[in-house]
Length: 111
Length: 119
Image 1 (cartoon, helix red, strand yellow):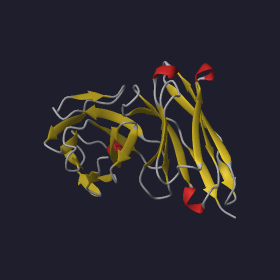
Image 2: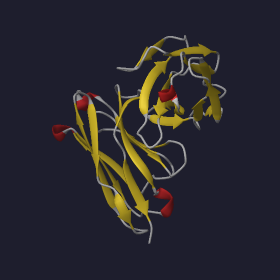
Image 3: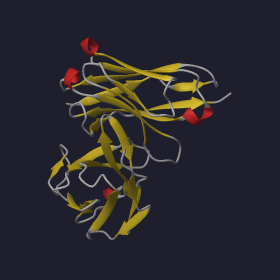
C-alpha cells in the first residue's frame, strides 16, 4: 500500500494562493488520489480527485478556487484567492484493492 | 440530495460491543463501495473497513480485523459495522463514506458519530 506524506502546516494571507503537497511513496507514483477538507468540529468533505496526469475532477459544489496538479510522485492542491472559510485541515487519500490510506493532514491557517 | 445519515455510538465499557448504522440516499447504493473511517481525538483520519457494492468483499485495517464486522443491506440502503471487544484506543469519531464505485476514493461523508470506550 502507498504511504502518503504531507507537511503538518501551512499558512496563507487572505486573497493569496497556497499550494499543498501530498507525496506518494516509492513505487506508487502513478496512483490517483483524492483531497478532502475538514473544518474544525465537522466531518470531512471531498474536494477533488487527482490523477498522475494532472487531470482532476472537482466535487459537486466545490469552488473552482480549488485545483489540483501532479508532478512525479507529488500531488498538489492549490487554493487560489484564499478565504477565511478555507482555514481547515486538508487530507489526501489513496486506495489500492479496496484498502485506503490517508496522509497525516496539513493544517492551513489563514492570516 | 446525496446523503449519509449515521446513528449509533455512545459510551461503552472496555470489552463491550456496539453497532453503528449509516443510511444512504440520493444515489445508487448497490453500486457503491462503502467504508468506515475513524478519527481519534486530536488525530488524523484512519481507514477502518470497506465493503464492496454487492457485499461480496470486505476489507479491514489490521488494527480492527477480527473485532469489527462490516455489512450492508442494499434493500434498505444501509451500511453497518458491528464492533466487539472494544478497547480504549477505539475511542474516536466514526464516519461512513461512499466511494464512486468499487475500488474508488471517497466522495461523500456521513456526519460522524462518537464512540467513547471508558470504564
